[in-house]
Image (cartoon, rainbow, N blue to C red; front, side, top):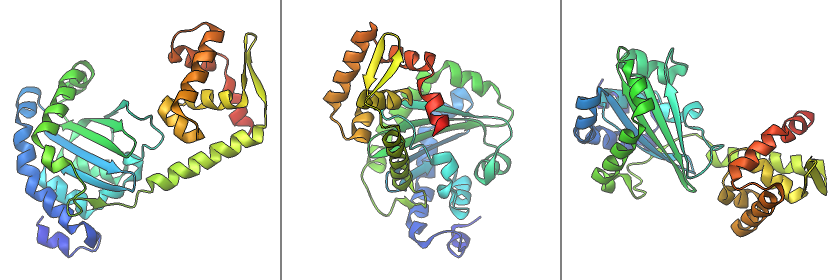
Length: 282
């Protein structure tokens, strides 16, 4: 498959030609950086995608032919794989991609390029999200044990990779960016509006959590987002409150129920099945 043939394929948006050329030009450099990972741990594929909140992305990988297929098929529009707007910020999330592939994107990756037994690491920040992909051959099922037991090795490799490719990964060089159809911000805003309507519908002044604790409507809202795995920083933005206000309310609630950690508050919420019945009702 040649680049020239891709440039005549209407499935590749014109705006992404320069991003394709950048991706093709950097595959050998990526492959060289990944040599220790490939030689010592049996990995055959590594890729990184940085997605900005406007849906544009910076993407690199070591496999040139897969890169060309990725662009040709417009897999950068695969919202099912990249849509992580519900995840918490400043936390790492892990996804093992094993078994029969689902969707054209993963099916092509596995069946055409023998990239199976993969691990995706997701990192979400305020203005962007990072994806780190590790993959190997179908026969290398031991890779799953490696992922589970040597996550520290993968995290160190990511730091090493960031250092080696710092100049290429940072900045908003328009020629390097892929422009996708993934509506990150629109979906996030729609979710916020839906949740706002939910709390408006409840119209409560206080809510009894258990025999020992009642909370205000605002505290009830904060607890709801906490139960969804949101950080205080995210809750502040979602509720138009200050970070200090959120933290102050959580400290008050913890003091009332005599617990030390937010994780204990989450356990309290789950143990009392607070939100499940309400969400089903509305």
